[in-house]
Length: 574
Image (cartoon, rainbow, N blue to C red; front, side, top):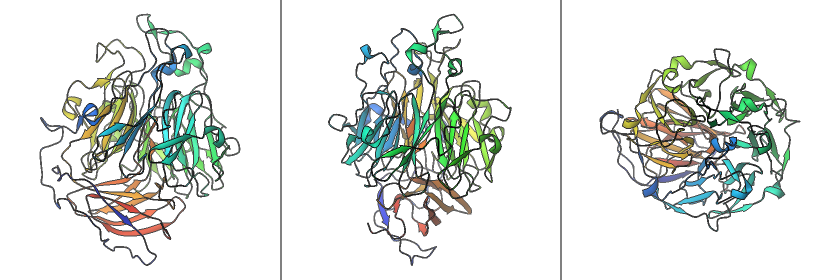
């Protein structure tokens, strides 16, 4: 296992790609480097060698998700939120945090339902900048999505709520304006996850919203636990599935609901998680939705702005045993290193994760071959990330857990919904090994976790994790694992914003790896939109190629470690 590299502030290098740039060229850059070859060190997870250290308080983050549960009637929305966005809100090139608050459903108990914006001071410590930011949005919050919908280079926010969703335009410097009504995206109902993507490849970002169930206080059901006490119901009990929504960006600051003409509302589900990418490699974005208790959805882009719902024919409709799962969070990546995007869905307790391996645009449930089946079924998982925790070039698996119903045994006597988060380290055989929680981050971190957002908060090259906990302080888990060398690629669009959906490939040793510039994944969360490569003991990320969503391609050559390299599109005049 490689040792930890020297810690330093990240240097950035912008690459102005010229048409004459040839593949294989080594790019010059400014700034200090890192150790060429990390020395071998103790194994992660062994005694005294944790992967993460919980640091929310010392980092200045004091967010507590208020579920609205006061011990009275069990209202279903209380058990499901909430999310966090990990992104650059103020344009200073470090990662800020935006937490979505739920609060009581009943108007007479509104309390403080403001979302919270924490700005990074440049070193992974944060200042609460909510007041005056325009980002508070005091709705009953679920999750958040990020993307530059108006093409001004600033990353905007879309907040899903129980009730009216909210579009917050980023005006620069961490200031936002609510433009929901003028943009026409005030979807009402119960929004869950959302994603910005250019579904029709016309150059601007459209908006996909996953809806959960059609719920109101008037149709609330009364359910009980094993002792006859009031408890939360299963979503299937309501029989109230809803279709998802697609808004097309008109390019003038407004959107149009094209769910019907695009073929999105032909099916309904209890939607919670969403990921997108070109799963069938036809050059057009596809969308996968994880549904809670009914079959998943896979919308394949036809090439004309419309979609075919193909979950059943492509193998992601049900799990291998022919049953539905309680799909919560979802992530897409290429952990088997065959060059296409696989899908991993996390589920309810007693249902192990579902790993859909992509084979030429068709999927097979290959969960058992990964080693995750026996260990993941012991908790209810929500947030999820396939990230390289130790920078050994192999993807690892982080899962945030928390129950939704009271069970006979509890992990914390003070919170019947509390469960341990999980860390599983990947190996070069495509399997995962669980690190006991006490070894991964120490004792005492047991809460009812929901969303988990991922990104390098302090610029040291390690992926950190931000976890939202129900009625408890959020985790800010800083990566302290022994780590190898690393390289980041921030792919920019023509306005200088993250090019969501771009694909970066590079060679690490004799292996060619793929990392996508994505943000929408996990559960109700937005993640850092940077392609990150662990290099292990290698000294360079070699033969790098970048493909933008519209098909433009650039060969970048070799990239040096210890930096995030900005890559601009061909013909950029910025």
